Structure formats: C-alpha cells, structure tokens
Image 1: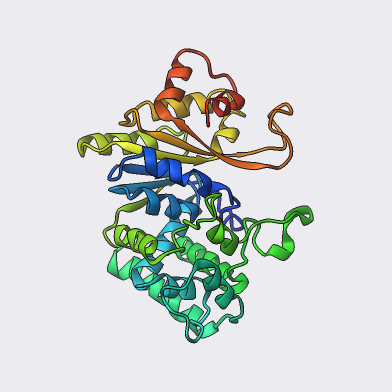
Image 2: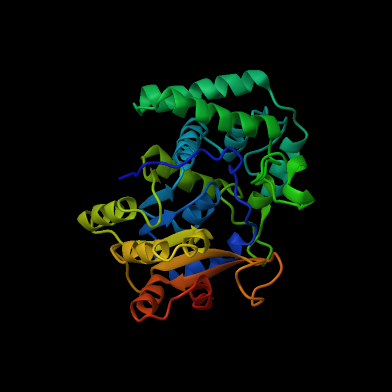
Length: 329
C-alpha cells in the first residue's frame, strides 16, 4: 500500500500538540467503536486510538522515518506488558523502586525524570527491537532502516522523557518552549482528565492488544499521493469497514501551498468508505496564513464531519486552508 518515502527527519520524533485531548469527550460521544482510524505522525495517534477503540488503525506519513518509528513502537509494545515497562524501555531508564502499575501519569513521569539512562538497558532493548521486527515478524528491513531505528531509539534514550519535536529541549528553536513527550502524555481534556494512552493501564492495553494482533499498520504515503489512501480505501471496502476518524494534524496546511495537492487529497478521501459519523480531527496552529483571524501561536484541535468537508469541496466552497478550518468546531 505504501508509496516511495521522503527524506528522514531525525528531529521530528514526538508531537508538539498539547490541546489534542480536548476533543476526546466529543469524539467518544459521537464516534462509534469498532470502526477504522486513520492518522499521521507519532505517539498522539495512540491516545486517539485508545479512546476510539477501532478495529484497525492505519498511520500514514510521507517520510519513511514515520513508518520505521511506528515499527519501533510496535516492538516496544509487544515486549512491554505494562505502561511502566514501556516507558522504562523507550527511555532506557530502569523502573524506579516501588513504582506500582496503577500510578498516575504525572507521578509516572516524575518518577522516571529522576532516573539516569542505562547503557546496558539501551543496548539490550535495541537488540530486542531488532529481533522482534526481523526474526519474529520477518520484516525486510534494509541496513539503512535498521540504522534509522537505532538512531531514533538512541535519541529517546539519550534525551529521555523531555524529548521534544525539535529534539533536545535545550535546543528548542529561537528559545521558544516546546512540549516534551512527558508534557504531551500529561495533557488533559480541559476538564482536568488525562486521557493519553499512558494515563491508564486500560488505555495502554487497548494499544498493546492491537499491536500484538498487527492491527496498527504504518504506511508510507502522501495525503495527496497516487496510491496509499486509495489502497487503504480498497482494502476497507473489501472488509466491509468504515473510516470513523481521520486525524490529519496540520498536514492540510502544507497541502494548500500547492493548488493540486489539496485537491488530490480530498479526491483521495472521497474514495474512503465513510458515513455520517466519520470525523476529521485537525490541529490548528496560529501565527500565519490566517489573515489575523487566528493570530498568535495558539494551538487548537478541531473536529469536522468528513462528509461536510467533501460536500463543500464538491460544491466549490473550498479554496483555502481557512475555508476548511471555518467548517470545523
């Protein structure tokens, strides 16, 4: 199903969104369980998947690094029977003494923040990841693929839970604060409830169960590409499945920089099996491109029925990224 991948992006390993959980209560109330989830990007997808509990999830990224990172995560989920073990292995930090499995997410990351990295745990975990992917699953990873996974895993091990979208938090661009992995995991839904996939044992079990059954499928492809989204649609129709949620982050913003890319994207989406409940999940960042209508660097997550956007596109009412955002709530 995949297309040819783009270049590696070694510094884009975690989300920079902290508002993403605010839409979860509405999503859970309006989106049926057991559908199909589509998404883009790294770990924030797991939180939406844990909340929506789909039959299968496809994570699509134009860079091959995205697919490799999700294979790395797959291996870590499979070898980690609890979220505490997962965090320990991901960051090469031994589990702190007396840290129970039912610990809250804030306490979980506070406990690991005081633990230094272990070179022996890093090396043994990387061997387990490689063994799981190559020997157990038989994935045909190239030498460059294995090197890429090792490099990504090394960044998590070296930097730890404070790792940001830009890598080391001390190197944040222009001195601007960026959320780290721990910040994203400790974000709340606006009512003080933490819903990340690491906030509870139940959420972690949802993701691990899907990963063990090979039902979180990472693919390489562009939203406006010629193959990947359409191939997913063909597969879903053959299995009588419906897309219930499509998380686009803020990818559409870049698509609208090219007059044909965004049109190809909506034509691709139109080939997916959807219904009235199918929903786009979008991350909107202010600062430019909104003519002052969405100023500053504010971040906001918004929802839009997929059918609403496709109808507006077909009727010629979509000409810019702002038109799409205006349809969102």
